[in-house]
Amino acid sequence: TGTFANGQYDGEGKLFQNGAIRYQGGFSAGLYQGTGTLYENDMVIYQGEFLAGKRNGQGRAYSHENSRLIYDGSFENNQYDGTGKLYDAATGRLIYSGEFVEGVYQGAGELYGSSGQKIYTGNFYQGEIDYMQYINADETMLHEAFGKEDALVMLDSSYLLLYRQLGVAFELGYVEA
Image (cartoon, rainbow, N blue to C red; front, side):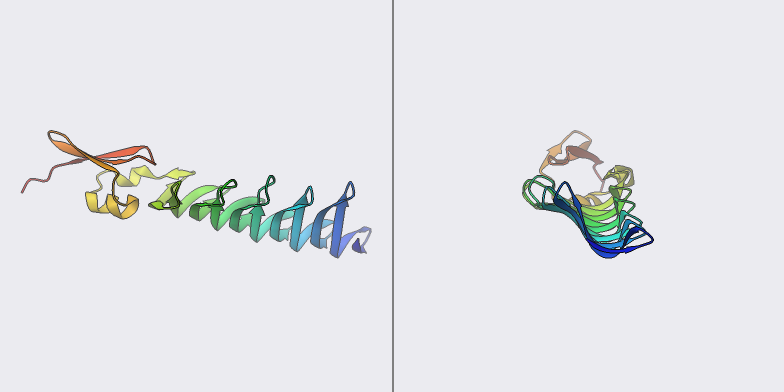
């Protein structure tokens, strides 16, 4: 239902598929355009901006299973791109807040652990913590990025800072006085 121009959906309208609502919002030349809402099985799966039929601009994505918010932020070409927040679909807990490029963590961000605490603040590269930046890092720099270690292991000529949730350890040498 809605308006048409040149035989195509144009303007505000509602699109139905097999009797169920599929989309409600703006259209241009038959494609989703402007602000709208996508549905699947009568559940909202996306609310936000569209460009040429794709999620582009600010929006919110929801789980197909339980309609829980899974992403809130910027989209480009149907992917997370720009600044956003990613949530766990089962628990609603914040997993990541920061920059995305083509759907993965890239650039500055914060990673959160299973109980909701921040476990890392810093740079990401292709969806992973950019550990290369911590080669030759000192203990202060590691604490700023990862917080207090879970365990400290003393060795003969060095010591380890262990971060269990990340599955990573940093070996540091002793500084001679």
